[in-house]
Image (cartoon, rainbow, N blue to C red; front, side):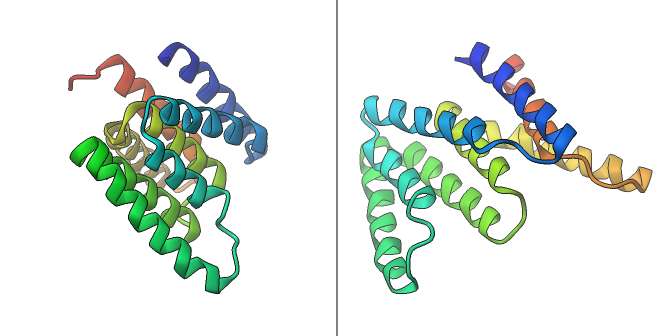
Length: 166
């Protein structure tokens, strides 16, 4: 799996560096593939949670209240099926979605982070966050404009895959 993830992240990072955008097909297709894979593995509540976060995001405001209730039930089902690990993954997906909706990072970054969370569990997010913080610190010290977050995502994931037990 990791042999496929790193080249994909490299292509995303190169695209983000060159154009400051990542094509939708390059992020949505892997996200849907990861969602289908975890559903196939039996974690259907987590797969449905991802679909409700991404696909049903632009519903009318009245439907969003119902959708939030459904998402809460999906979190409970995930907790029942997978224990705290499943609940942690669900909460991490919700946090990624919320950061995207609040503008903390772009849609491509959110979709890539959701894909990585589905494939490797939320543990992958810690080295990604540390790489993002280091990238931000370097940019602040250099007093330069920011680099795309996809670089930090690539670096953090690489670190996670090379040193999984640290």
